[in-house]
Image 1 (cartoon, helix red, strand yellow):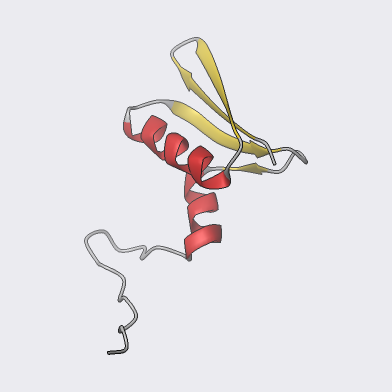
Image 2 (image 1 turned 60 degrees about the vertical axis):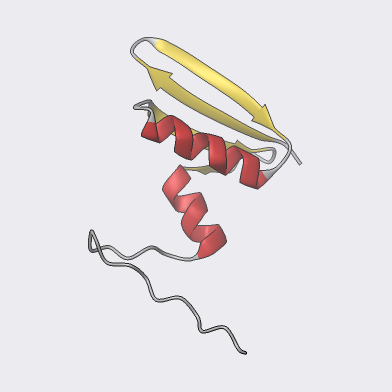
Length: 77
């Protein structure tokens, strides 16, 4: 499968291709943290995701209150 990560800084547009969804998500989050705008992940079939939406889709929703850590499941001993 193919994923394209696009981002913008000032008037420049960047685009990066990835073969894995996790790799695309990792780079998109790095681009957001570095201050780039309009960061999007486009799947081969044309579906477009923001980094936050794709992260929520893959790993579940994050808490909406800043500073609150989501509970983690207990590990069976």
